[in-house]
Length: 613
Image 1 (tube, rainbow, N blue to C red):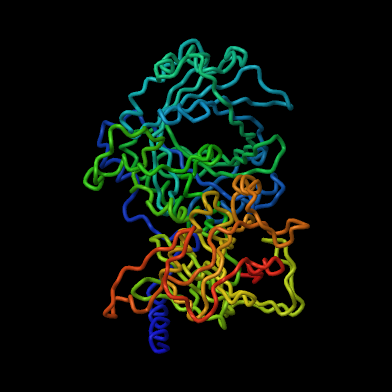
Image 2 (image 1 turned 45 degrees about the vertical axis):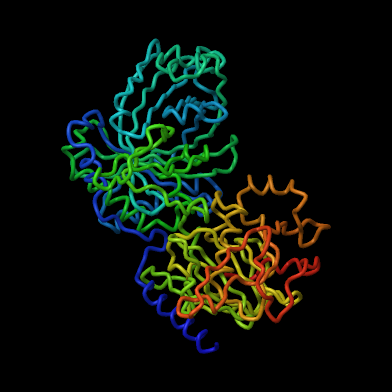
């Protein structure tokens, strides 16, 4: 048995060697074909004749910049210019007030269930301010984005009665969940009216100025709810690309309250008034700027879930991730099964494959929220943990209480990686301890810097992640969702995903003689919205009920492992392994140790590890 375990560990190391090829710390994939080439193959001339240009965009994480907005803008702009110069691009700065901040509000109108969005329409009101006072007239924008770009361009969006009306179409380009560029064609009409002219902001009030809104299948009196963003914007300069005038840069910070902290920053640039089919050099340069400057040089500043939103601010604000059916602009030869004509219209025309079906099971594969200074070498390559095991039923991972604690990560293809928190060769030891800013905790003297979750994937995107801890009091393995890289900063991580991950771990990890204990979903490592909702549950437990410290939810009780060596393919017996559910454990013989009992209140802290990694 010990020989078999050693063989499995060696196989894990071998897999680690295969995975050790250099990858970007944030994005793992590189585009194999230019995005504009793919788009034009799908829509040959003159199908996109009305598309006059492109807008390139990316989201930055407010947690990775100064809390002072003016300083954050200055730093981000400086880093963009430096990165561009390093990669051979020219970025110019305005001579007069390049960092002057413009304030406005942007209100998005839709039904409670976002019926307009599902029909491919987006309604926005922009109110600009001067000297702290709102302008009398507001800018109304109605956009249309359907699954097919040709259908998008055929939507009239005709304005009746408004001032300064204009209609234009462009391709928006950003990074998707897989780290590759994707785009969608957007058409919009903007006009100016006094705010009072919009009455009570019903669908009929907007239809007075755009009659086609009356034909979307909703009553004219339909009440539209408002989602407001407070926008702080600078226009510091331009990106110089061949074949067009300098491309103006816009950088915005959005907050949900006036004067409140931003929940996102974005960077965008673009060009217009061009023949979409005749500016290959311009398209190529724009895509290279995205890849070489924003992706390769500044990936560490991006939001952890930036790819989920495709660079779109409104998608993040409205919590509308890029949908599964998102391949309308891909070449027909690669389109696969035709879309269901009865399926609801989606709000994107992306020329990339559909979102992975594993997203619902284990969460979207997202880049790590950050990479610590010691985890990458001088070339930027994130070092793999030399004890990495990629667990499977053929080659299960092996864990031992003497080497605990362990980190686990579900990778992009649904495998689970297991690593011990071993000392990092570039890490330091703190004789006097130190203060860890990411969780506001004081570390004890002698704390060392270890391999963290990113070292199991080489910095590539990962799904829900956490820890496997050995609890001496109950003699069990305790599992949780504690990962500041792949769990905490992703809004889609759920208790159900943790149950799915724990079920997989119990199937493909050999725990030795130690049985599996409880599985805890830690509320400090989920979104604020989910935390608020779960805190109302009577099942919530605390490390210290008096102070309500470290709230958590037990999502699975203890039970024996579903891993059975005799069921391995190399052994005669090949009966399928019964999966574990959140409610019950399979009826298999108990291991030598006693099964886990209820967690002891005094030891509830075992639900999470205080290691600095």
